[in-house]
Image 1 (cartoon, rainbow, N blue to C red):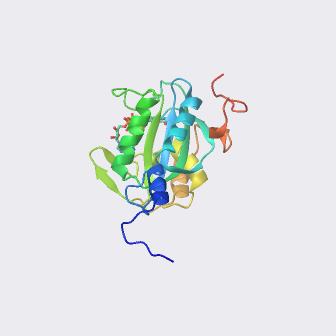
Image 2: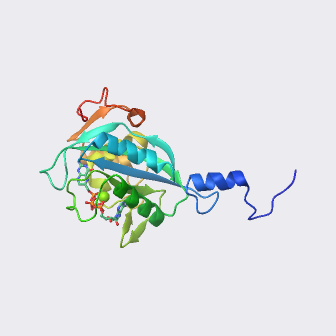
Length: 204
Ligand code: A4P
Ligand code: MG
């Protein structure tokens, strides 16, 4: 068998690299993302985000779909929330830029009210067990441990996952917060559908 020299990347590897956004071939992080929407066609917005994500990340698992009471600012429409796990070679700041562009593409414009209504919100919740504390990016997400709308779907995918700073599992964090205000409205696979059949509470 012919051995390849270091740095001599095959065409196949290069395609895989481009497809999953790997800046360094062979290196990929496991990232949990939170998705939320409470303006416009919430379901279509979440589906579009998950579809577009796959241009730069491998989508590994998506939680059930939840309808949730708004937190932070209470006088606003109910949210749809979900969590997904992706594998990507994008470095975390590049992933954040990609997510911000995606939010723009789905109709979100900068300058909206903090914690206010939005057609889409894409948050980096966890990135392996890395800790990032930069002006524009904090990982783990700073409000992860307080929020049932994040912890309920996250626990579906990774109940035993440890929080790198708090030293508790997601299941333990959820037990402290409780599940109030979070209602499961569609089982796994909702992102693959086209209409809203069987999704109680989603747009008519
Ligand atoms: N930023 C820092 N760290 C991160 C991170 N890990 N992931 C910066 C994503 N962004 C991060 O975010 C403001 C800035 O945070 C970004 O420019 C980025 O540089 P934003 O999405 O533009 O604004 P925001 O979402 O209003 O602010 P924030 O503080 O991220 O709010 P949250 O914590 O995302 O809360 N209630 C329910 N039921 N469901 C929801 O989904 N969402 C919110 C927003 C409030 N209440 C909710 C929900
Ligand atoms: Mg946000």
